Image 1: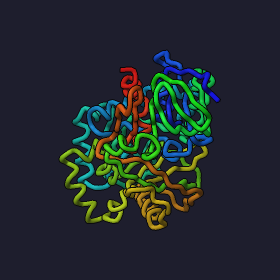
Image 2 (image 1 turned 60 degrees about the vertical axis):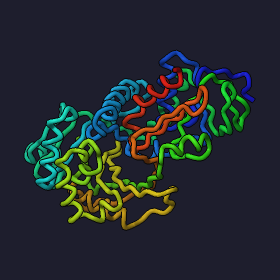
Image 3 (image 1 turned 180 degrees about the horizontal axis):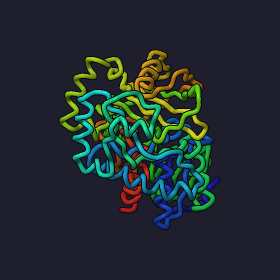
Image 4 (image 1 turned 135 degrees about the vertical axis):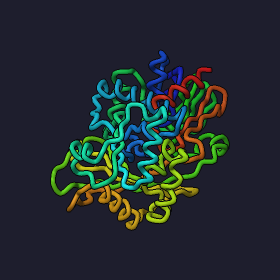
Length: 373
């Protein structure tokens, strides 16, 4: 059907890594198409917080990816009509050991631009915070509504950047320059395959080398009983042993010991707090992390209850109710990204640390460079 279509680069997958790859390739002057097997993006890219997180990312290359990606989001979002709902991050420390971690973090290069606020300072900006010993404030983070932002980004790439999109189209095999799909054969000199957590459709033997497990998480939309306004995203002590930028510091070990005594059930389910606000005033709250060989199909009420308990430990929200629940799944491995030359002219790229929104644009540039090499 599409045998007359010729592209310099074809992207398989319309999640944020695929869209960012298409953007990077088009910016490089290539003729680009995106092929997606579903009618729209329905995976991890639309089931997350829309939280572009810099502070706390793994130190070094991945932290730099996040900072660069944040900068690209700032350029792209207004052009694509994507609202940045709020900016910045507040981490409430409620234990002395957590304060020690934050003080150590601020002494690293990752702490540039961040401050440790007293509770009096923090409460002036953030009256809904519960009591604690101090609050790390980072100005670097951005928050978009991912379920809206991803479709908006797709439309903008198509209408303004001249990228062709083919929905409801499954790729059966790639033998560049031929790409065989459910809608006929496309012609592309190069391909970037962005499979998300689909590890078996294309190049399963290559992807198997990454040692990927499936991570399933639970998330909630919470309606405050009365209107509030969060000045930024929120995290808690549990986040300091979850995010590697903090957790890899030697000072995090005593905090983990305390949390293992006091909140062992949370650690067992990989629960830590992220709370962000939507334009309508509701909060997106999560999340948990359960690992296995496949997606976990059933959500746990107990897990939701623990997430809510942590939310109330950090935010004063009496009478808040749940209006929505959902699960997400992403590929997880020891490294935070996986990229490989799967075949001549074909590159596979997967973010394997659950940080797609935060590192997508930088990682995509690496994938395009690899495809063009």
